[in-house]
Image 1 (cartoon, rainbow, N blue to C red):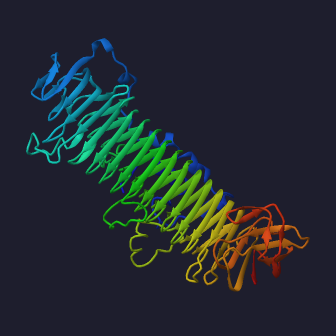
Image 2: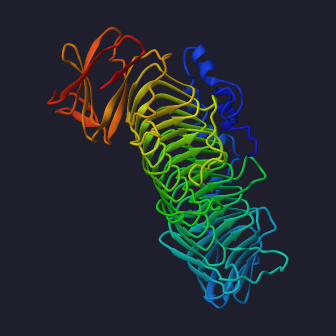
Image 3: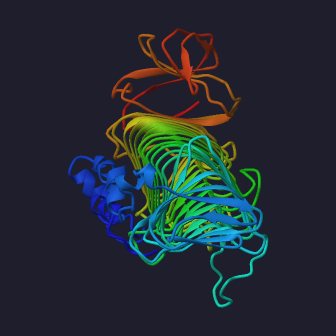
Length: 594
């Protein structure tokens, strides 16, 4: 991965360098707890949308881009096989018109086999108002910008515009393979307006800019045999309705030579994409402030792709930063992915993945939002996971939350030589509501867990080669509510160094799914009523309700009139169960056999 002086470095300073490498010797848990707290709030502060955008080059938008004198608009009429123009700044030859200088031009009509070409040597903006055009070309690109300072394409109000290229190209220069998209530009390009644009890329890409590309608004539909919409330096969507069907990537920015470019920024609007490869892929940062996203990649979560194919929903190689939005993703590969950092500050997510739900190689931070991962191999995975807030529901065929570092290989054959184990993998839970249903480990961290607040509910494995909790170094619990139900063969409780008391209860045989587990105090008051969703032979319960020296009774079965959230009951009255055991809290972890 290329180095970058941006969001990642700010986070590195907070976590004492551990997010860059999962193999160095620094221990942020010890550093943080020595100061009395984990400085997770600083992760939130240094990974805002504004901070992420500031680390990238500014886009080319200016207010003047959207202002022009209607009296000075130059008309160009497309007449099927020939073109009418009356200006020195545009030249028509047969079915090709070449615009040679800046200005505002209005295009109407159709070309059955022709081209609109922009080759402007001056520094003026070329503004093209599309008012009901239909362009086709049988040998190449029907709309190409080979030279200009900036091009602004305006979709006239209520207009419908169509651009269709050839299935095979005859290039003007045999030594070059450009223009290679139905709508192609070597200059910065903006698309705006209240009309519609349909682009059919039969040869390669649909819309491609070799510089920056801004979609201000409008209704844009792209069909492409390769990538749908590509801005090399950046792809910025301010608003509008964008629909892409592509065999390659749907939305893409791929400048890999400048660390401040190659980014995607989406402020608002609606994006619907069906892609053979990635839905949204940025060489550096994928930054989403809001909008509505419906993404299907690689055939969806029930499909499979080879390890050489990337079919992720949202991908930013340096970072993915999400502020808000509504996301529905069905992906053959990871639903949300970064080779380094992901931070989710808000939004509503419905994710289904053939591999991981959310995967970051270095750091995954969740500061808010409602995340539902209905199908995945592993739900949340990273070297360092920081959960400050939010609601998470995870259903995984392997681990629900996986604190493991390095490459995204877990769902495609596993780790060479087995999973690495190191004290430099961490899970911090400082708030939020986390509900996990996992066939593998519920929470698996190849290092340390720190829990200071929040609610964690695990319906873990039924096989004894996995556990509802699985950590290698320690689990320090200082607050919050923990409920972990699963098999007993590898069951773990929080560490004795915790400051909050916990119970670990193992049974001689498995209890059926839906069998209530109830704890009440000596005076009969309710401490816990929980209905696991899967069969269980072990329960781990950590809560401030458990106090040293107090005695409690455990009941199995029965019912509650309270309100259940993910099996955890609040209020109401418990009745009908069978007393299984009594215990007195004498140490941080009390172990009882049922």
